[in-house]
Length: 461
Ligand code: ARG
Image (cartoon, rainbow, N blue to C red; front, side, top):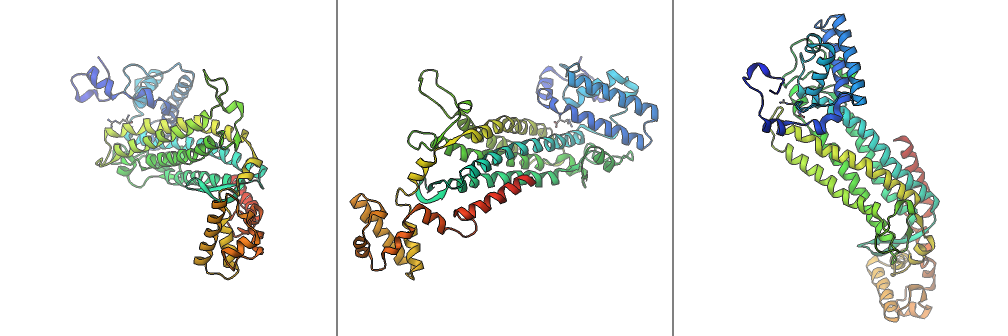
């Protein structure tokens, strides 16, 4: 017959079907090291409250140390009958310390406050790992921006040529959202740094245990203010999942551009062999699978967030078993980012940019028309008229299949009396880029400052 943690009140053990449904060791076992750390801290506060004498505390800590080693080596693993990581480790402790010592640890704690604490510990560790991996992508973007600081490219809106921009400006436009994702994780960590240990099942502990002591022992900044909130809230999980999904969505936007840039039609970049795949049938193929998987996995991370939010919706206080469903989505989000980001940063760091090709397309598609309009404004022409005049230039060029800079002095004068030959000073990519020199603009001097700011923030995070 199955053993459970609640033998006293029950005449028989759980059915096979219930046990199979209830079981979570196949996914929560990764919390085992945190559970053992929590048990150590809990043993110390039981001792502090006079509920464990010195030899018992020592025996308990020794047994927990052996258990930790056995978990790490795989010598101790969950058994068929263990419901969850907490149940399995209690069995492991009792096997090592005996029932008299091992059976004392459960006083004043519940799996409800245990799991809420361990999950925070696990996520805080992985938020640091994920942050480091996001910063590797940012580093690759900053390095490539620095290496291509003066390369011009077509800036687009609606995927149509809009105005020339610097490639470095464009790459940094992908870096800033990723830096904000890391800042989000830093902010999240400050909110998540409160330990629920000591909340018990929901109402707190009557045994004189000090939650602040456990919290400090486990590396938290403090303990939570409300035991119901401590055991029932999972907004810290949802917020983590949001940042994970946002990061993946940010990455997917860059991935989509890489996929386009690597096409024959764009020919803006060549992917390194180490970060491209071939085809089993078409010998010539070189495919951007890393970028495509990044684009695809963003959908999966959004799904993780949506699934979790749906689980949490309308759950009454305090703990409900539904909350066991909080783990798989966020574990999936963590695992996905931890495998995706290293490949993605590697791809970005090793990509070759074809600067001449990009620069040659920068003025195409009449992308300097706005420069004509703004030149006219500087000459004192109202923008409404300037916009029409520049539009007329585009129409004439389109009819004659020429570019804006091919218009003769007579053509210009024929379009508008305001169009003197002086307008030619802005009819070049360099002139256009250089003129956008307010803070945040694509002028080379501003982008150089921006690059330094991004690199400084990267160094701080
Ligand atoms: N395994 C559960 C979870 O992940 C913790 C156990 C709480 N179970 C209970 N019946 N109160 O949420």
